[in-house]
Image (cartoon, rainbow, N blue to C red):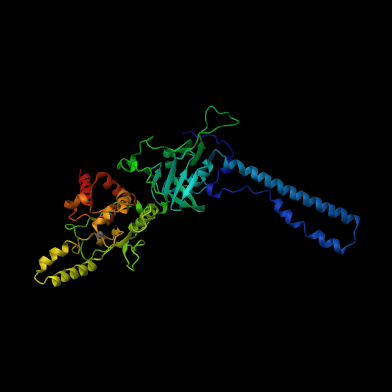
Length: 461
Ligand SMILES: [Zn+2]
């Protein structure tokens, strides 16, 4: 691409965007101004009034006036100078070859970055969200959302992958790869000149507009479907998730509901896929929305945070009485639970053999190693005295069934999958797998056993 001529005020702006500052007023102004007011007062009282002194005082007065005028003029000049910057149509920075700017200002791991925050000011985008996840919205409502540290971004509901992760740099500006701008920002031209080591970002002029009063194309984000996006080709479903319909701002939970390491939560534990006694999940934290009866329950942090988001929406929907009754169970806890149940059954009916008692216990409790609660990725929650299939008749359950996938959860033992899961219907038992897989499972109508098999099949093909 040929380098474009800068449109206005470019020479002064060939500095790194972070160091851009107001031009300083002429140096003599601040030096003269503060000196003047003090000396005349003292001299006035000690010495007789003479014509020379009056003239001197008048001169000092004129001097002060002049200094004030210069200061005022400098101020006006500086505002005039700054003002066009906001409306500027172009800015440029260097990325390495030119020694004015160190290369790491705009290059991170060999990816050239642009300052999205500055660009957004230039284009009057609205910025919303949290530090961790920021949304830039254009006039027409099109938006791009970046999660800091993540290569995934959202453009008008489409999840796209970038060349490098979104970053927060000096002055809390958000930086994104230049290639994001090239692919997804409309109404601007991104001119990367490798030979000159220069990036120029220019608003596109409307061709019919005059030279004196140029008009520019609106700057916005590419709307869905206008360009084939290779990176989402892998998942046709994600593209459909334009609006999750959350009534609260859950952007700070996004990284948990839709974790970057999206395949990390697919562990399958059931009666045939058992885990050993030494299995222990990492990052266990206390569950916030636990039943208020003194019990302490834990879950893996990512799942717990996603669960917090679920509760925020659940409560906003009016269901305030649902709470978690059970989370992580260690292998040893399950051993002691199972042993207690076994002893109780044999006490209740001394004629039972141990095998017979075990059969009975297995109808309501998992054998150690076969319980999904060992993973720390699931919880039991309901609004009844104890977990009961009657929960399926509650409106809160219908809400959970409809919405839990948005937060990364699935109903682990659905009514129509008893033959496959080996468990009877448990409307209270929710398993975290992350939004990506939860959504796909819900769209494919698969339980975890089927889904894991489906994934393995697709992989081997
Ligand atoms: Zn459970």
